[in-house]
Image 1 (cartoon, rainbow, N blue to C red):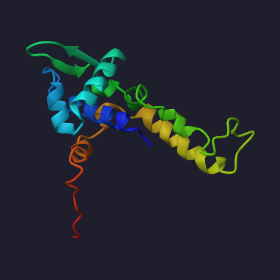
Image 2 (image 1 turned 90 degrees about the vertical axis):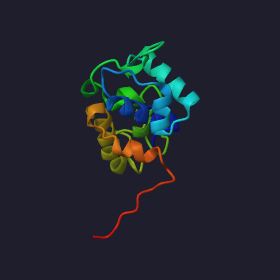
Image 3 (image 1 turned 120 degrees about the vertical axis):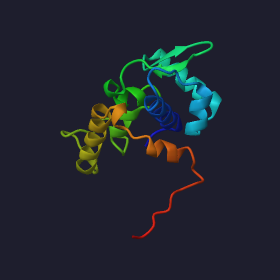
Image 4 (image 1 turned 30 degrees about the vertical axis):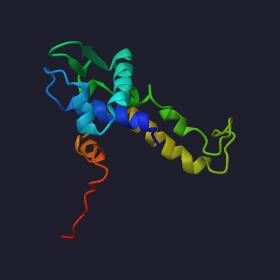
Length: 149
């Protein structure tokens, strides 16, 4: 559902959100902890600064930190600059005029899914996103195996 860039942005900002807010986080540390290639990450971080999600400081003691509290940053703000996240709510058949008045054959099935996805992105904050999934994503070769109890 999300592009690789949007996934990487979510990983990076989630990582930053779970660090000490008083200490800027270095790009190389974010890359190492999230599994995002450093050059790719640098572009994502620059865009996040440009859109007001992050602040950056150069030099010794520099790095990246959230521009505002994680509880004030919605997922749609993180993903939007990197992906057409609400495009997923459009007609899966690609019909330009699919609506309640002119539905496609799949409209009634897709409508609640698209609405729930939009609601998730608009209502979930960065503070609510756990770091466990991000840490696992950084180690794709080390999948956890569920053990029977």
